[in-house]
Length: 366
Image 1 (tube, rainbow, N blue to C red):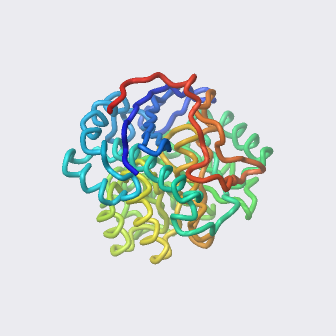
Image 2 (image 1 turned 120 degrees about the vertical axis):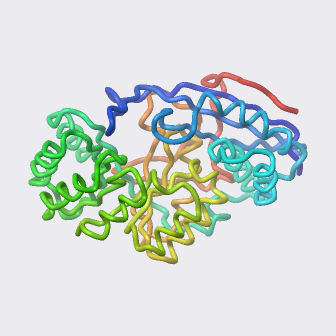
């Protein structure tokens, strides 16, 4: 089987809420998604999707992804998509960095591999170990009353994993969490996500003030060194996200005992191929995992959901249903959500098909 053509599509994903806001004054109302379609000489088609969460969140610029993919097309065409690690070697030789662009191709190759084998991708990633995936819902940074209303709505919908975006003044975040925690169930898992917005002393001030509240602190400071310092001086478990960008950094964090959990965003690390290695390393080290992505619709959700479904339940903290964060859908067959949990079909590959009416063709390479 050989890749005969690569088509690149883009689409705008409007956020379903008022605004997706988080620390540092960052706020977004829409995101640009990129969808790659690989067509093979056998007629099989594979689909991949990546969607950075705005240009000020991670070192990936959505509008620049088609240019990266144009450069990568030359080394992808003619390759067997089933030899994904070899294809990664070729992409790395052609273009340094840019893991998000490579992730779109990688995900499409896994979709093709599953279709060629007649198996869902989760089987190829290790087997179905967590059939029913626990979901978290994100409460964006907002006025306290609005955040409390969002929490109440998510609880009513059956969600028991809640991630709060923090980033008010520290004393205000303390008051918010203290007020909300009065109704916290012991069966709920809470994460306070600061997105690197605090200094070390501010993170410690917050942690000491809410010491009696059971929650994870996610990426409390910008740098790895700062987060590691907080980890050594707080009783709250620390979850790392933005400060981990490659396998070597994850390995260092484990060796340094710098985290209790991490957010494994598939596109940030270059796709399912490198993310599977990171997943297995964390499973071996007993690091709890949120397996997700920066943003996206049904294809992106299906990709990280297959990785999550093939992860042992004892290590999988949760995942999310990104396709339901948008007002439009880019694919049919996305994972199903009910009562705060998500399930996958047993269709071959990722089990999703793009809605081409919702996509804008950017270019085709043959």
